[in-house]
Length: 118
Image (tube, rainbow, N blue to C red; front, side, top):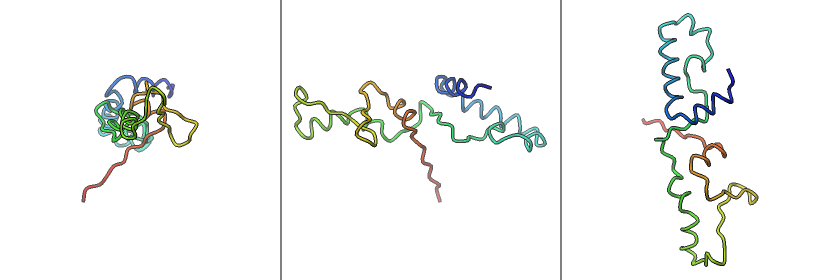
């Protein structure tokens, strides 16, 4: 299969990636001998694909959407005279205003952090 095309489809169709993983798990759960020969991806194990769910909580959502406005108000910057740019890691990468949070997550490889409850 074309992995690039598949990744694009997964990113464009909400929930498709999760449904595919569930379908694969169900298939291999009834076929243990075949499961031994399959790769983790074939068995439906999530192997660090950067596929985000539309309902997924991303801690930057409010901050990214309003940070330039906050900086202007906080420091009393005259927005008619000065521009506020949001940059990523280095001074040469300016994030365009039209980026959505999902754009930032995909372009700059945001990673999920999971916590184990004791």
